[in-house]
Amino acid sequence: MMLATVCSRSPEALLSFTTNTATTLLPISTKRMKKQMLKYRNHKLPPLHEFIANVFKRSKLPPSVCLVSLIYLQRLKSCLPTHACGELDTPYRLFIAAILTASKFLSETGTCLTSQVMVVMTDYVYTSKDINLMERSFLGLIKYNLFVNVEAIKDYLAIHGKTLEMDLIEDQDLD
Image (cartoon, rainbow, N blue to C red; front, side, top):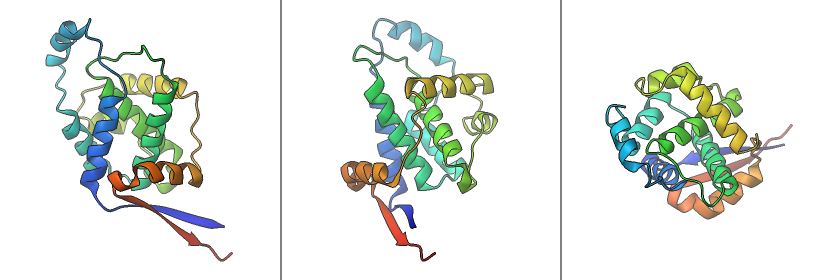
């Protein structure tokens, strides 16, 4: 049996890459931009980089959960129609949904996040009901395609590993 561990050499590289990934998934609808700016001015959203950094710091998630969330975001991007547009807080919502889903998928690592924990970690920007809806919508968009095997991780790291400063360490288990 082969065991594998994801190692991150730079938390800052992971943070920057995650922020960039969440930001570039969907363009923001310019038609609704002014209305959205008024709506989110009172929504207490910090800059996305700061928001993600706070979640990473508070959750102490292992690199494997962060990496699987990035794979989920890549799967989402490949499923979206070309004309899809988001709102100002779409990157925040997609990040929350991806990290929550990845944490639950990899729950044997003992780091399973819950909607209520995410409410607190995100400084009550969203309610538990909001986060549950984000998660369900995200799962529907990626068609519940949650399984990530070692080959998928290798493929992702072959493309993005240098930028992420992440490695997959494989050990031979002697059962």
